[in-house]
Length: 418
Image 1 (cartoon, rainbow, N blue to C red):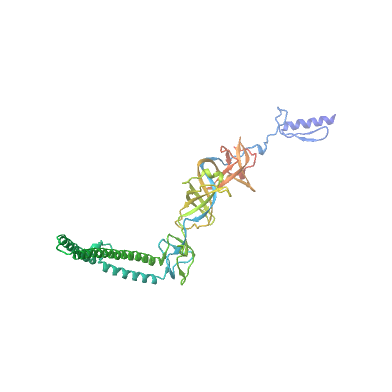
Image 2: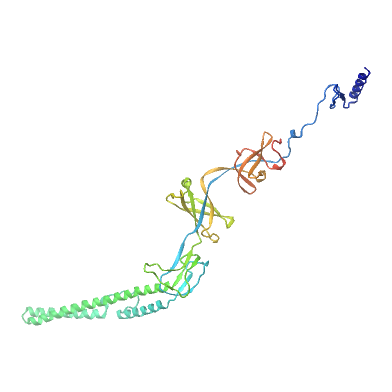
């Protein structure tokens, strides 16, 4: 009995002092109770779990949703707009070669010089013969008017013919009056016919001589052209891909009209971008569309072109169509044969979502973004596109109406944010 009284006295003293009370249960276990006002008669904890407290000052940003042009990604190869095996159109020995492989040339630059001696000699001979004909025909200038009737031979023959006709008329009257024997009349008639033949012969001879003069002029033009052809020039601006001839070799046109090739010339500006379009995208390609492309040799530069030529059909083997775009290349940094990754802008628009690049969390090949939903941070797996100017394109995983956390290192999935 005394034992229970002592325990009760200790309990009352503890409550009055406002301190913790240690109760000894009948089983002997020790329990601790928090401070409580005496009037409540019960104990309640005041601490709150740290997880229940909202994170403050967490930076967020809305997802940007923009419209952009739809693009078709293609692959292609750059090709020369023009490629020519420059050939000689004359016969002769190569006297000098002015270019090497890789030489840059402009239109009209000399590539090869063929020895012009033989052609020059023939030209000089032809000029002398033509000058002789000009003197014979009395031609003062190359393009002066010419008349057969003005030639001395023709004039003499015509004068003889006129005299013979006058004599014939006089003798005819005497013959009709029976004053002149018939033999004399026949002789005068024969002389008149002979004079007419001589006149016609003189005209034909002078016409033939003048035609020889015209033929000589044509031959001279051909010889001048042959002399000009001994200097082989670049037909367009570009660079020399192959040098096919050396000094001392003979060049000559073949019987089929194809000359001996002396160099391979490639035009560098513009270039053609040959693209392969799969059959499912053929209907989206038209002339005039813009093409943007990159090449591996210049990864930091983008180039543009315009589709000019569209293939008429789809190839049965590859199920694709070939199109060509013309690409300006004024600085000649692009070279034929280079592989290109291209994008063709299509008429229809597509929606584009952008978020700050700092919002992304990489876990291997998986990209995550923390999205605020009902005041709680939730991790969302997304697929990404290219990153440019500090912003990353989101290709999938978001609707575009979300708010994202731009400092994901300060948050965990399920944390409350204010």
